[in-house]
Image 1: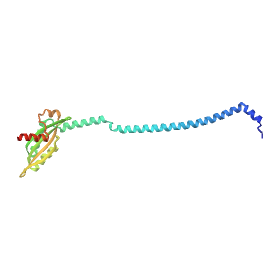
Image 2: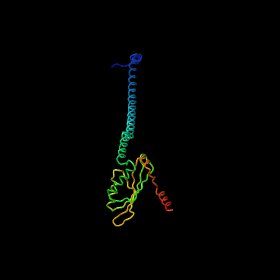
Image 3: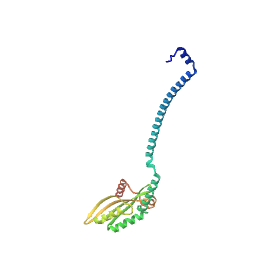
Image 4: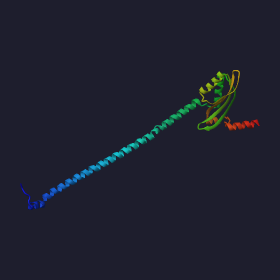
Length: 211
């Protein structure tokens, strides 16, 4: 075995080759440390990027859910307008005379007798104006039921607001009906029908007439 003497050790320390290998070893250690640090930093960066990406995906999904009801809204509005215009054309009377004609046809078909019929118009609401009918009807029960059913099933849009018996004699019944239908606002304005009175106004008018 070769013994390392102090003189040999001093020679090795003075040798450039010794310092070269020492430098290489230190560079290797530093490289390993830097590689580990870079790996840790990369892992942290990659984790943060994944979290940020997941957060953006969640925000996008929430935004899609919020805007889903608005998709195709223009088409739905157009379809609704088309359906509304089709309903107007089919169920809304063309003018006041058409209302009177339909009611008269139902009167003859059912066999009832109209003892009174008052028409009035309310305030315009959008494209339409409500037309109120206050009718006195006389007939048998079957005749009155045919008249009422005819109103409800008529092509013109009639809505029965109120119905009350006002008298009965033998097999004849007297009935008061309050019915609503609608005209286009322009047609109602040109109909010349009086304005519909609210109940307090109607009562006041009746009191003035009584005086």
